[in-house]
Length: 171
Image (cartoon, rainbow, N blue to C red):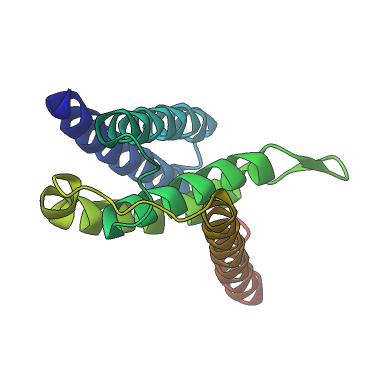
């Protein structure tokens, strides 16, 4: 069971990295199929991280949120899910899907750093929360961090677009 946890965790990290490369190539080539493939790859990474989290929960018998790896994994999953929700909404006839190319690459870097130290934290039993209210509080806190992340990346996309428009580069 522990082998499955490691495999799903590192495979999820790999899918995040693959989604980031596809999103970056979309910025370079403006090929919509790359962005769609990046979306599906990101979804696969989210599912694999969810499976890894559930396996850790099953192994230890309580909610694994007290180690650094689990906390960062939860943040990355929340940020990825919210980025998919935001990028698939229509706003006055336009699509926000190109924002995904700004959201995913930093998340992939965070996943890569997390994966480089995860072997130390995945083998450690997480501490148990005293109550479910504390676990809910921690979950809501990480959800708010994900919203702050999305706001900052949206601001970066706006600054990049403003610089391109200022120099009359519209592609």
